[in-house]
Length: 259
Image (cartoon, rainbow, N blue to C red; front, side, top):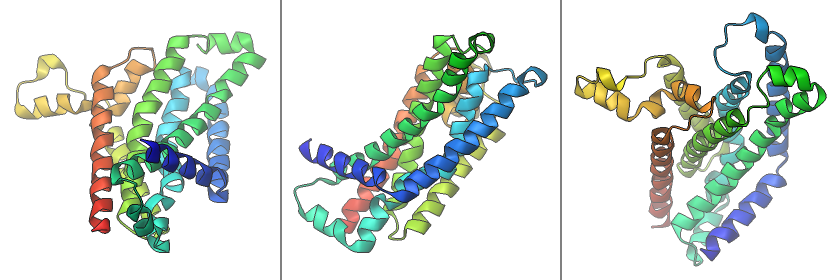
C-alpha cells in the first residue's frame, strides 16, 4: 500500500509540473466555458429536455477524448522510452500498485478539471441568482447526480488512457490510441441514444445483453437519470467493471514487459 501512495504522489507531481497538462486544461476549459455561455443564452429557444446543468456534463464527457490523452499518454510510454520502467519494477513496487497509482493520479486530475468546470454555473448563480434559480442551479440533486456521472465515467475513460499508454513506448501513439478508443466509445453512446431496452421488452438473449450492459452502450440514456438526482446503481457497477477490465489489461501488459 505504501508504494501505491509513493507512485500516486510522484505522478500527481509530474502532472502538476507538466506544461502540456496546463495548456490542454486551459484550452479545454476555455472552449467549454464559451460553449456553456452560448448554450445558456439560447437555452430558452432550444428543445433540450435535460436540466441545463446536464449540458455541462455532456460537454465534459464528449470533450474527454481531447483531454484525457494529455493526462495519461506519458504514464507508461515515457517510462518505457526512457528505460526507467524496468528500473522501477526491479524495486519493491508491484505492477498492480504501479498501474493503480498512475491511474489514480490521472483520474484525480480529471476530477479537478471537472471541479473547475462546475465553477461556471456556480459563478452564474452567484452573480445572477434569479436567472440561476430559474435554470435549476439551486437544485442540489442535479449537482450531485451530474458529479457522480462524471466520476464513474471519468474512471473508465482514464483507465482506457492508462491501457493505451502501457502498450507503446511512444507518447504520441499512446495519445492517438487513447483518443481513438474513447471516440469509438462515445460514438457508440451517441448512436445508441434512445434505444435502451425496457425490462418488459426482454424477449431474447440480445435484449438481455443490451439491458445488462446498457450503461456501457447507452450512457447518455443513463444521464437522464443522473441529471435529476436518480442514481442508477447498475451504471456505477458497469463502469467499475469497465474500469477494472482496462486496468487489468494494463497490469498484464506491465507484467509481460517485466518478464
